[in-house]
Length: 78
Image 1 (tube, rainbow, N blue to C red):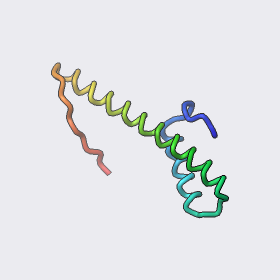
Image 2: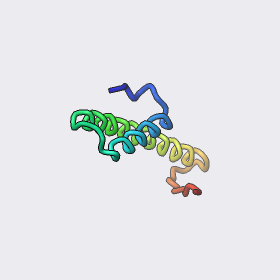
Image 3: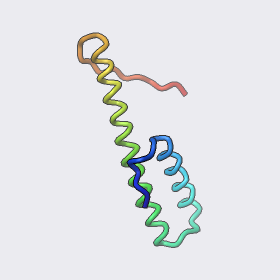
Image 4: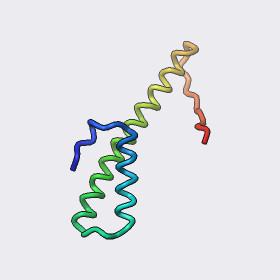
């Protein structure tokens, strides 16, 4: 399995999408499916960590803006 620390969030998400698609096809052996599942779980942990870090940075920036610590939710436009 590849080391996930050296890749970007976007690369990890693309690889995770590829793994989900491949597993969904159901054409792999049990061993290969388990290896891909394990890689997918590592990528999922990596992506969650990156999202948590980004959330912390946003909260920190919001706190610096007005001098008071406050957490503001923001909505992402689709």
